[in-house]
Length: 134
Image 1 (tube, rainbow, N blue to C red):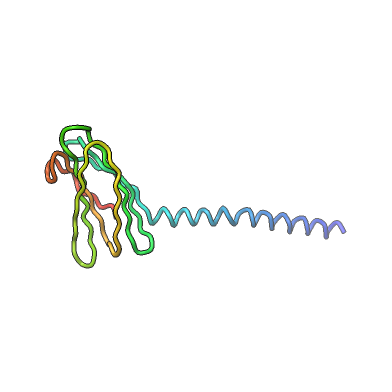
Image 2: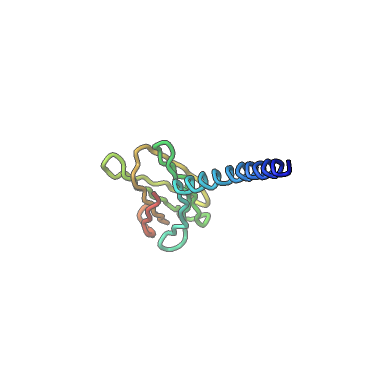
């Protein structure tokens, strides 16, 4: 009787421990797979350090998403962020201007590579280094 009770207790203990470990293991693999597909980037400064951008880029369901934030000294000249991306065998680029602080986002399907850089006082003035963000 004691042996049967001890075996049942041990089996129950192992079952509870196994159930307790399973959700933790699942959470660890989900976190690892999510962080592998998203990338935080920045602060990427203009060459004169008067403006910078930072953000996050990720892919979901074949679409690449980018959320970005821009910071520049309020008043005076505008800052510019440029995005260049490779899609369908060719390069495309666009820019956004701001003064002060701004949040922006964009997305596209079939994008293979994304680069960004920040300029201040004009579209092509005081531009910082180009960085690959996806």
